[in-house]
Length: 337
Image: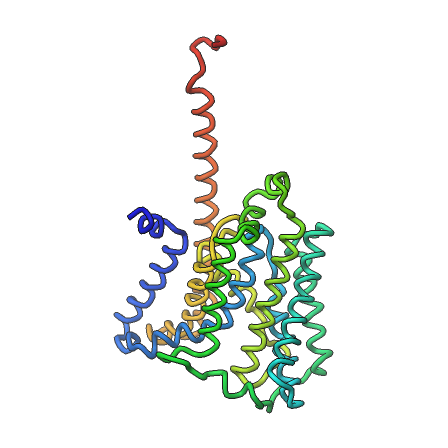
């Protein structure tokens, strides 16, 4: 019974309820949406956002940010397309994506954790550098007309209309959630985000944890780049542009605090489904897709403000409890006991 109560108190539960409400409201507006194929499509289209959200969740939980994941997705997608044009194997594509993603993550981690540059500024610079490399790599042209072994996997399903890539994304979410909640090293991410100074005092490497978080973020972005190329069959120079904001919004909507130390991967995955479903739901409701960015921005602002107010209230309550505990046993008149 206590486990059920704790589950409903979890931050990700409110995100799940919000997602269900979105589906119900859309179903009321257009009952055809409630078909299984329509609902499962919302999950399948969330594959790339899920990968990006889970990757950046590691970074956000440590109290940092990464706005270069969209560019990392773009360059790894371009590399996948170019290797596919030359008849390369899936192994070589994945190896290139993972190596590139890890390299970008390592650079970000060293810049933020080792050199102490604010994460927003450093990763914004990395974003510009990687975007420039995409133009150099592709000579400013769209990578297209590639097929090979990856062409047939973009929309291939395994069971119940669930695509192969979304099933893999869910598996990675489960593994990441287990690592964060059940392993000692995994719990370091939350500890560093909650109190970096305290974590350092108890022997947790804040530097190493943050660098690892950025490397994992880069790896997930690399996998997302491979999925992007496989799914769409062409890669433009602007591929992945704006995806970083969607991934961050997915994490926030999923209950992960931007100040770090709170949240889990389940919430990030649910937030990714919400973010990827907005444009589709608008079609069923009858609103034009031009409302997509506005609605997304409003949702993000409301949730961030609500999160800030909740944290402020929690801090004030904690201070009040400490004050009460210090004064409860104090003798009258200020005399020493």
